Length: 363
Ligand SMILES: [Zn+2]
Image (tube, rainbow, N blue to C red):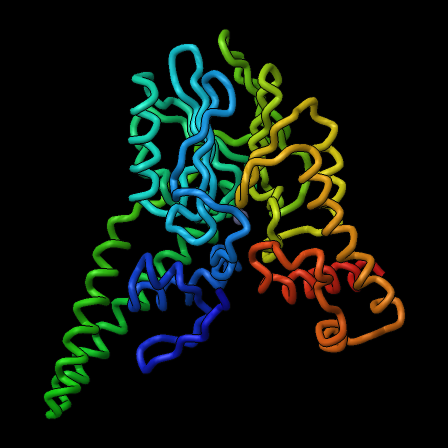
């Protein structure tokens, strides 16, 4: 599915995908897109079908270890996981919406009666954190210090701006409604006001819960049944990505440090360091790697993803050395056919652009 450009009298031009349309219906998706462009998330989630499965399908990876897979074009958007500890449950990421978080909690409760006590956010992007509210209560929300910074300094203000825009649009439409005498226009405006209000009500109900416990390098969860480690391995998808590593089960929940069979969202990324961080990840004694997006993988798929980043550098670096302009690089460099089955193809220009900028800055 290609991104669409949506523009109307009441909304700013926004690049959106059908997922957002499906989730929020016309009003909401325009508004959210407007703000979420900031995070570069918009086009991350429209699927090209690189992986299949019912949205929200829970899979057991090992005794007490589960993943909840997001289908490529569905509403929970990102993968999440949960681990049964001795007396409690640890959750890794909470999907994109309050409803998705609630359905994750319901899925956990079908499997165990143990309470969720620990909630880890792999990084600050809303598609991994906006379900946090569903777990409010005696839950410790954990993330890197940098991820907490970004929830507080970027995500919260962005949400407030989005709500402000929605409110302003409603006011404008109400004025237009009074001004017009055309019955068809009146009907259209009434419908739009209703939709906007519905969106506003829904988003007002969303409470962004920032992580409380901050991790700098690592944190051991010394559980007697299922010991776990939280690891910050270096900059990559953001400067605050946290990995959940289960040494006994040899499983790592990697968040968006790993896009499996998909081009990555690089909006907040540090591409050159990301490669080094993935090399660190590959040193873990793990066999199963759960990505933030895409199907569960092994070391081999993580290596494929690393290879993509390395190739991206190879495609761009000579052009930077010869002094080519970014526009020229964007025009000339095409994604090789071997990546044609990957999801999120439309990230390719942004991938090139980010690599170009980083290499230029490094010269
Ligand atoms: Zn992300």
